[in-house]
Image 1: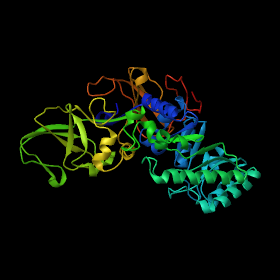
Image 2: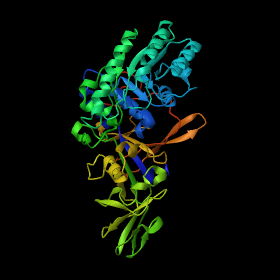
Image 3: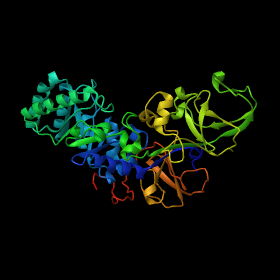
Length: 454
């Protein structure tokens, strides 16, 4: 059995991912939805979450890095797939050969993808990005006529097809911010310029999760949902996840590694930033900043232990932190819940974001590879699904083990544990992505990671 799974785990409910995709689609009924699964699905696991999103009707998947897109193709995805973070000399030809839509923000990128397409003897799928005011990637409006004209010239030769025109909001999570209307104006002008150049893109898109939730005028042909599909609110100003019918998909939990009585005046953790005010019980949670727990949440990070909300006592260390239980009791092996949906009174990722002076996005995304991902499906009576999202036998526990051929799944008889949020467990380390497709039983039908929509 994987001993690490006994220490800590991140439980991901794929039913929540599917429900979140459906809720977001309902917010933009006239547009297709792109499920953004970059950064290993915001820390939730890209392949299982991609399969769940496809099953719930996501017509597109989106990644930042080309390598992330290649991993989805290797896992069996054949649907529309876009990646947008490119640097000179990137793997353009491989992306062209795998029918991945690539983002182009300038003439250098247009030249590289055109050369790659000609070398491959294939037509590249290109989406042109306009910088409407975010100030990151994207073509400046002054250079946009030149880029669209050059793209059209390459399109005429058959080297590429301009499949999309897109941009990204800077402040869609701040309702009423003046930049929102200003960016929409720039985007509309960019679309007119592209049309004048002779381009007829399949999709036009600018809406991220907050714009999907609150700006119907920004939906166009496609909305890109990132943090929303994992059930985390894009910002406190917009509201809590439940305000939009969203449910957090990840629960982070650990088994207490030590419980002991200590006298008053006892220092706790590095620097003794916390001194026990009197005789008390200290519990050790075996997670630290090497696992993605923010060190700057020292003294503020919330944890549910022994039925109550506690705060980290002293500094977060690399592998562990301490909570003061006061007069309450606990035992080694009892469960500490750092965050989850909040159903049992546990903190949420947003609570951790506030405690650490950051956002919920960062909290879930930074959980590291030492924490196994365990996939459950509450739509099928909480049964465990495998590391690739496939429903498993109810008495089986799976661990991934590296082999020379890639990833091997071993099956064990799973003991039940009273400290777990699921009856059975299946762990997913960040090993090689399996190349076999799998299905997840859902209310939308059984859909493999192939791009079919429900």
